[in-house]
Length: 253
Image 1: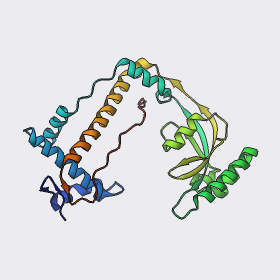
Image 2: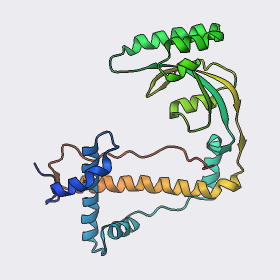
Image 3: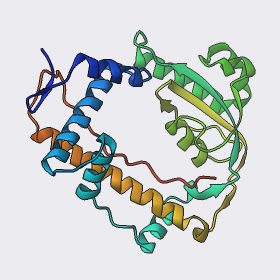
Image 4: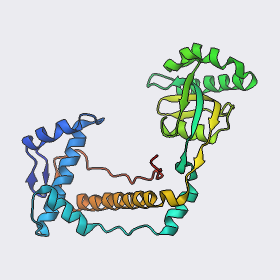
């Protein structure tokens, strides 16, 4: 069944042009269809308002009319700076080692967790065994180097791992398993330099820009959600899903 938006059908040629742009997505076909649906509802809304120009110009003018985001105040920027000081440090670096117990569809997760916790208990009693256990059991190539990942900086690792590392003390074994999309990690830190906090005055403008951009993205998600809900979309097995981004704003070194 052809896909149509408010009675206007998407053509095979539309999909053929769009699909190559989404090959890096987990579901390229769904991603391409979502993009086509969103572009069409925006174009149709621009038509209702009589906006002129090419597609990009019309959609840009539509969003300018529909989405107005106030500039964040100095107080809001300072509040963000004080709430997330770890995002505004320079020179952070840490020596990290880990043992990875990879989670796969075939793995009994509870049995794997119990085994990882048992090994963590062993290492809490005798940290000197870390390298040997990493070499024998880790599902990461770093296991052959005793689990050593070398020196890492903020944002280099997956978010859950990254957060655990920068909360931990230098020279310690993190006392809980760190869970990420890769599996269960036992993590040990060597030397660690927490760097220096960049003065607020030097990052205030970048914080303001980032906060305003985040507000715009949230408003855009809501606007697109409303347009999709109001549209008569037929032939699609799904409707575009939207998630508000809530990640912290980081200072770009």
